[in-house]
Image (tube, rainbow, N blue to C red):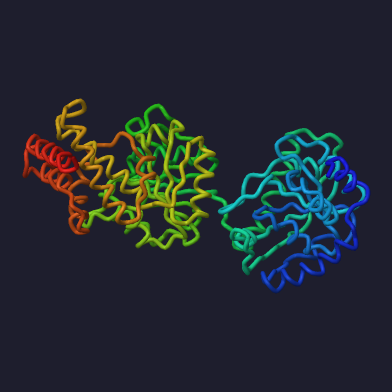
Length: 517
């Protein structure tokens, strides 16, 4: 149908009352029975007069589900692509929808919205601009603030949860859906509000939507983080999180280090030339109170992780997410760091953070990082924060692959050093052999090839020297043939000369190629 005709219909004629109330008579009991719909705070939606319902957006079903909160028709914008088919466009218009061009500043759609409010009807607005799932709420656009100021209509904050889970393909599944409305907000009418004023009003409205969302059990936004460990990883991570707008408590091992960082505001050893943002407060780690933190980060070498978890693990609140930024494996069994923390900390989710480049370069200078977590909601939330810090984030649920890829990279760097350094004939073969054996171990435990490719970068031979003996033990206990890794462990422990190990790896590779031929 003609877009201008659809907008004109919404401005002048409104919904088709026969169609609207007939469809609602069918949908409302269906929602109540099939999705066990809970409607909380209906009394906050005025029975008459203009009103803006400002809600989060999780599913294409949201406008229809939220509409049954009100005892009168509610109008809403929908993307113009839905109106291509004439019968569908007619039905959507009859139910209160009108098209918007989301790829442009659609002044016609906004004028239609103002006209609907001016005549005393209600409009549903999704300030996020598009569907956001999974995880926490997205960032609002300032259009809702501008609309509230231009029309003077009260704004009712609304949150919906559960609609994102009702659809799988074309199948609509039974799933609990809940909606909650808060008390209406009113703002003075302004004929031509500035962008900053519209943004300020939006910043007043959106926390009220977040409040309804969290009351329903939605994932809260990350506001405060504790970083345990003030080495390269910890200091870089604290800077990145503060850059993303979080309040950060950075915990050091010693009181002397804490005092030096508080005084100088620069960690000349681990992050030279980068001043700690004002949002970073430095403490001795033992003095951290973790009960009010949304995010807790363990950032230290694997050799120190058991002591840190023993000291702080039982104080991590259950609602908090945990980041593990730890290089190496955990003694004595060669445990993966994130798995080790998951078994001992009762957090809502544990994620692994890794980077193909050194952490100072990746985190402090806006490089690339890989965030891995089995919990997709927390993974999405963490990725939003890291991107807000200016980082390039690759998300994966392959936490095992992410951990072992970092381990393989450090072990391969040690192999290069043991084989004579970069450029030596045997160095590349040695690194490839070590990397392939760790890759086989990762595949056995569900690791994916693309995760290894995403973390292909320069490793740390010093970390590799601490890791390889534990890695050899883990591979041997798991039954993975690993002559290159086991031989490299013998080099680390002084039982074999590096040149002899490099020669043995070269002979193995040559034998493998002859066998394949």
